Length: 294
Image 1: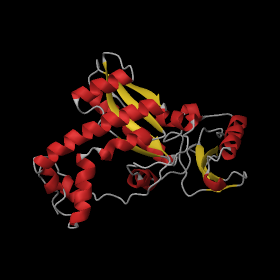
Image 2: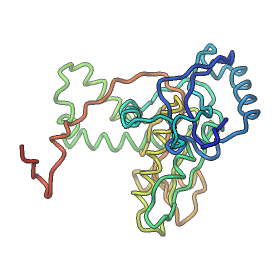
Image 3: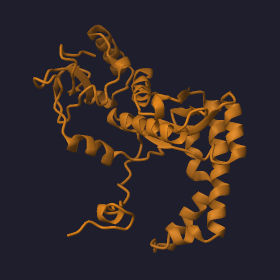
Image 4: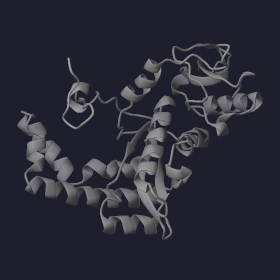
């Protein structure tokens, strides 16, 4: 992967035939390009060739690829605030994946994004376990299914599930949703994800949940920028009994906690955006509940 003298990267569309043209989005390496991805030009060419030959690119279609190109006197490639926001807004939680391998090079980029997350006192408590073994993923999927089943069954019998779905008028669709949740099938896809990165955290630091959450979000955004889908599945670790099972399965030592198993793969679905509350409903000024004066 080439880099210009000023150290900037730009996104280009590159087909397997090698023809390149500028893509609409250009990103600075300060935003999404990790240090581990700064390959020499020859390494990049060999990687691209091997990926094309393996069918990594769908029907040799064009993909986003990073190549060095100086864009300004500041040494940064063109990047607007809208570009950053669009990456955030277009990300989806993906639960169906194509059965295609995710190259280690892309996983390294994703974890590099997690490595550069902020943390309290710069403690960097995160540790990442890359899981590809089908049997281990199957075991994690079973734990996730059982955990989600217990959680959503409780939600159903307390009436919270009915309240949550009261806006859905199609009774057949609602019944199917209830069954998927109560059975735990909503989380069973973890077994079928091509790869799972299990985000763990060291416990003897101040801000464990916040640090790990920021690292996980960085990784999800990087994965999305690389054309991959992700979904956080907390079902294997949200119950103490399931947490202990999963920690034992992955040999996580005492003093660490599994925070967020992250399923990763090439999306085999295109979910619609989920509704968001308007900004004016969630923002207050100076004190909770205080609106900005008109």
